[in-house]
Image (cartoon, rainbow, N blue to C red; front, side, top):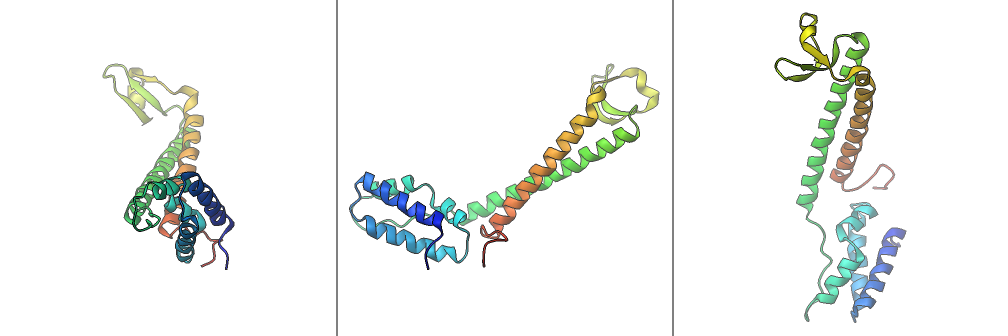
Length: 185
């Protein structure tokens, strides 16, 4: 069974890079890399394999710079680092969703009480706050957002929601070993 076309293109590029680096045992290196790809193909998507191998030029340079002795193995990126970065992306995505919910709530409040909800500046204290103001202290407050609060909050809520969704999706794919729903198991 052949490899994915993206993996075959990588091997072709690696062969070309090895030739440019003057590496003599190119065919052995290509077959060894093909074997590594085939082993990992059972557990991860081609994009994940390519991500972990890194650029073909860097791998060829490593073989070209290798001293005499055994042929170096392709170095895959650290699995723990990949899991850690996926965890950070997941937390970041969830925080963006929380921001989207807060901003959407602000939009709803602005629609329901447009006179009370805004970004306010208390001229006496210098404090700035977002939310509903007490009508008793309106004389001390300046409205900083004016008519721009609703469109700005709606735009930022949408941006935070979409960004959060993308980060959570990428983190979930990374946790799953790079497999997507379309990738056969």
